[in-house]
Length: 128
Image (cartoon, rainbow, N blue to C red):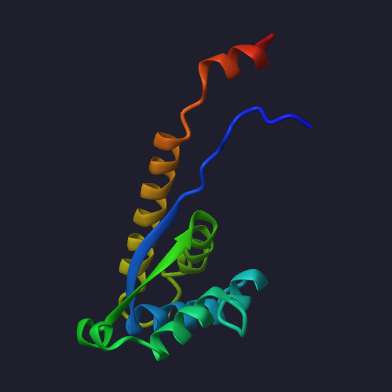
């Protein structure tokens, strides 16, 4: 096996609130997809976000939010969970949270495109 190039993964640092997690929990539990439902169960990303809130640092309590790292795959899953924002009976703020998450995902993809510029020499070698 031979390395052909490097690819850098993007990790986004983002702040979230208890209200964000409460909304994600409800949307996850009501989702049609089993992977999305698992996100709010023990071991899932939303369950972990909730635990992080439970153990806030004092300065985070003053701000009412915590920061955490999210991979592009994490953001993609959270976006999929929030795609049901139009479902009747969801708490207010679901559409806004969905928009915010999709914005973070777009930014992560843009940053990935910026740092993962293909090496022209590699592209030429693949064409041949």
